Length: 156
Ligand code: GNR
Ligand code: NI
Image (cartoon, rainbow, N blue to C red; front, side):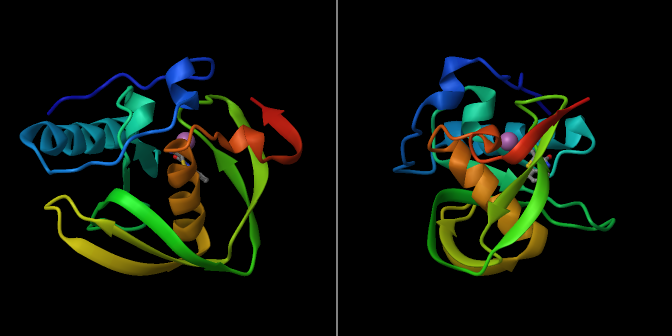
């Protein structure tokens, strides 16, 4: 169990483009485990991208934690290859504490990635899962939800 520090707002690493993972090394395995520990430690977080813990690699984890036995999803080198429709959701970010705002995202998407074992998978997502996949994928390109907020950014 290793909880890593989550970078916030003005940290320049959050604005960098992350690099692809070429091989699932022990270092990547530890990164994924630590990211899950870090996500669960937040209590209410539903996703976390590697650059948020200062690692510029194309990796993110998601667990909507909608029920007791929800399983985390691990995305390595994700590629959102199809999107359609649109939805607007209130978003927040562990790296932008105390601020929320509405962001438009695709209503439906298809994404392929490698799982924690390096095996390729393909999935479809709608609703909050689709929103979260887009939010995390943006982190890999140095984009924060605040860049995309429609109208006011609400502060706590
Ligand atoms: O915990 C989070 N909640 C959330 C809510 C709406 C849309 C996106 C998110 S992701 C965020 C965690 C986070 O900052 N991931 O990068
Ligand atoms: Ni975020």
